[in-house]
Length: 160
Image (cartoon, rainbow, N blue to C red; front, side, top):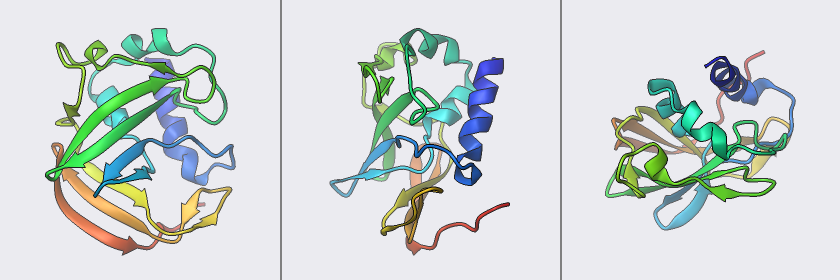
């Protein structure tokens, strides 16, 4: 549990930390494969203590993947679905069966646990070190359902 909290704190501090650029989750939106700023999978890890189930897949690792995994997502009919999860995305990638976390489901899995914004970079990168982009698409999600969409949203302010 302590390791999970440490990972969560590090993940949430990424935008302000001067660190190695991180491997992002991917999302398919309108048929386009794009990046996500933060993983909706973290919300599931917070809701349920599933790190112990993920841990056996996390061997090796690198500084470009502090969380140790990369998820693929898709928006279908205004619903968020988890398609796959890969452990160790920058060394020896290993598919994590979604049935590890969701009984009798191998995917896609409806992301009922996620509520909050999904920030998707849509403009050119303006700061490589902080991984900031000129603009974003922001989807507001409530219990896995997209309830609003904003385009060309400017980057959030830098918190010091």
